[in-house]
Length: 137
Image (cartoon, rainbow, N blue to C red; front, side):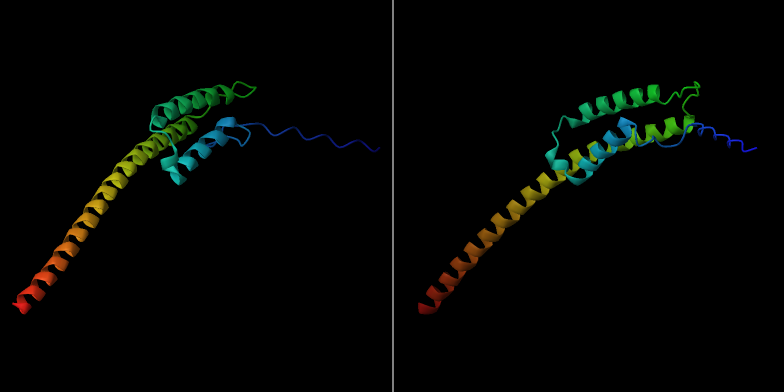
């Protein structure tokens, strides 16, 4: 009376708070964010709008893919999380632009300080020459 043991049913899918690793968006979006954080100067200034379009497209595609076979809809928590993620990406792009402006300002200030330092050095040399001439007279 050896009866084969029943095959366990496959695990049922349920909405989660994060996309599955097989979702293309879950791989694309973090890599975009990572590249923004690690090398902002290598990205074109028009990235903001193209990134937003890309992220919106990815989110729309993700929403379509997250309706599982039983027709279960994506949870509102996941929608809120993706919305926060998109806002964060947009904020990173804005911050990247502001960082570039600050870097430009710092560069201008550094050049100005260098120029003023050279002027002071020249004045000091001239003052030393005048002091020597005065002592000779």
